[in-house]
Image (cartoon, rainbow, N blue to C red; front, side, top):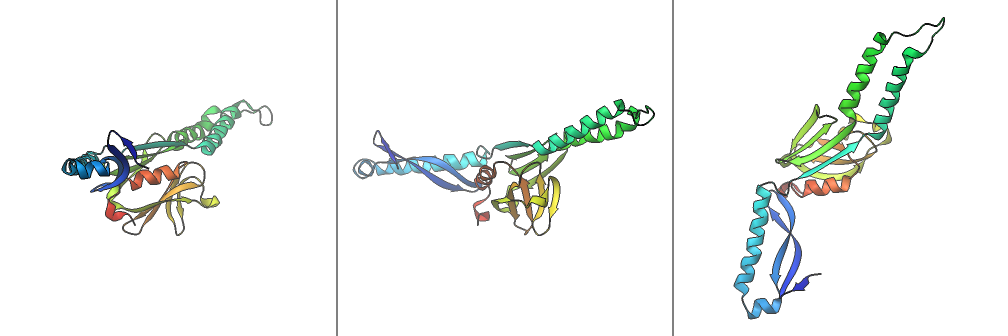
Length: 216
């Protein structure tokens, strides 16, 4: 419902710009005020607010999103493996034989690398791109927003697992925890899934910045 304040009605509306949809507040004069006083200024106010919003879109002010999801299960598994590997040298195996630490170093290095690379999955929207990266960012993917046709919240099959997976008939999946995801349909027909614990928010953020002509 509009709110009347000082002869002005505030309306929350959606304005469509060249780079996407964003909600702005338009200052619409009360009907009686428009009719009886100055409708020209009222129209100027509306146009000025729309243009200001479009300018903000062009500057990228409405294209900011960042979220990091921790890979809880993956972290628990890798840390458990690390603990086992660390205590192995202190265990006796027949005739008081101890496993040399040097033999376990490759396993320790591999587990540490896996922790650094896959402990989390981050998603960002900036500079006209959707950026996804694992852990410290060595493994990443960048998608132009102009290439995205549609984004929708989905759930992965239980067997999809975590990490980087190819799901038959559903495209590639990047995931660190859970089964919730956002599926992107590209203009070329390809599909790509991003695991996330806030799928609805990610869909909203993507739809707010992809070009209008790409929204189905």
